[in-house]
Length: 80
Image (cartoon, rainbow, N blue to C red; front, side):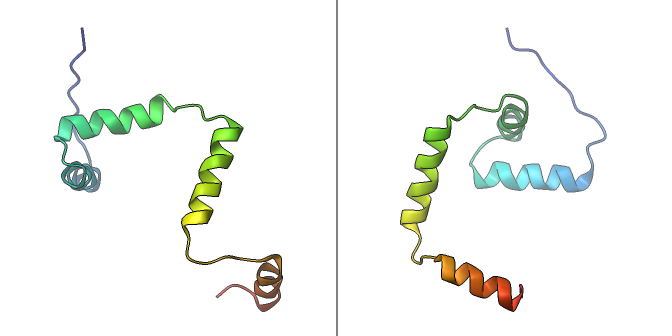
């Protein structure tokens, strides 16, 4: 049976961010708090192959590419 937890003295900034996240994800404050706790306390293990696959998908979805020459140029010029 799930347990009940009451939180006291939550800083206003944390409360406001939790409320905003709950609204953005269309969840109750309670559900959003549970998701946040699960994310931090029960991280999902991702295999290196799965991580590499995600990186490749993200890279393919971008509308630009960065070459080794681009990186070298940026290193020489310094960061903005």
